[in-house]
Length: 357
Image 1 (cartoon, one colour):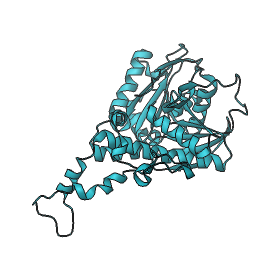
Image 2 (image 1 turned 180 degrees about the vertical axis):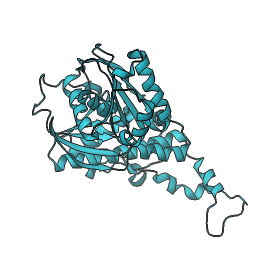
Image 3 (image 1 turned 60 degrees about the horizontal axis):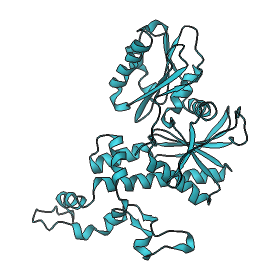
Image 4 (image 1 turned 90 degrees about the vertical axis):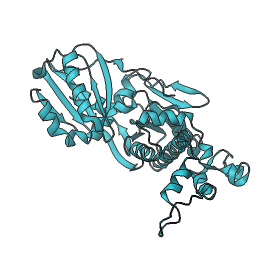
C-alpha cells in the first residue's frame, strides 16, 4: 500500500507579470513537473520515467496547451536536476518559442523546495511507524528560523542518495551520500524479478515475506539476542537464506556443465524459482532502506542534528519503506532522533525551481 498524495494543492504563488512558468526536475530515474495555472493559486504535480523523455516532452506540451491556451510566447521553463543539462538541447529544440529555458542549481532548488513544504504547506510533514501510522506534524507558525526546525538533515533519495545539513533557509552543505538508492533497487529487481515498473516492485514488496529470503537473528540463535537489543525477527543477513539453501536447489540435470563452472545457467534458473518475486522485492527494499536509515543516523550524530527529513522519489509514499527508515532512525538513536516525511517528497527540486523562477 502507498499513501495518497494530492496532485494539487493550494498555494499563494508569486506570478511573474504575464509569464506562465513550468518547473521541471529531471533525475536519473524520474522526470517531475510542477506548475501553477495562471492566477489560480494552485500548484499541480506530475511525473514520468526519465527513460521515456519523449512522453515527458509531450506532457509539457499538453500543459501549455491545456493550462495556458497554447501560448508559448509567454511561457518559460525552469529546469533543475542532471537532466536539465543532459536534455537541454532537446528542450531547446522542442520549445523554440518559449521566453526562456533556465537551468537552476539542483541542491539550491532542493532546499528551497523542502523549506517551502515544511513551513508553508499545511499538513505536509508527518511521521510514520507501524504502531501509530501516519501522524501529521504541526510546525510553529512563522517558523522560517525556528530552532525547532533548524538545523535538520535532508536525506534526498532518488537514483542515489544525497544527505544535506540545513542550518537555515540560506545555508546548507552536502555532508554525505550513497550510490545505493532507488536506482539500485530498481536495477537489481529488474534483473532478478523481471518487474516492468518501479510501482510493480513496490506492490510486490507489500505482498512479500522476506523471511523466506533473509537470514534472521532467530535463525542463528533460535531466539532473541536480547543482550545487544536484537529481536529474533531482526535481519542478520539480507538474502542469507539464498546462499544457505544453494545445495538443496542445485539441479541434478544431465545437461552438460561448462568445464570452468560448477553450476550451469540452467541450475541457477531452477534455484531461483524457489524464491518468489514478492519475497525478493521485500528483502532488497529492507536492505537498501535499512542501509540508508543507518547512514542518515550516523550523519545526524556526527553533525549533532535531531530532525531528519526524508525526501525523493524512492519513497513514493510507500508505507513499508517509511516504516523501515523510521525504525532504523529510532533503533540506532535509541529514540533520541526523529524521522520526518513529506507528502510531496518527490517534488522538492521542482517546487524549489518554481519558487526560484
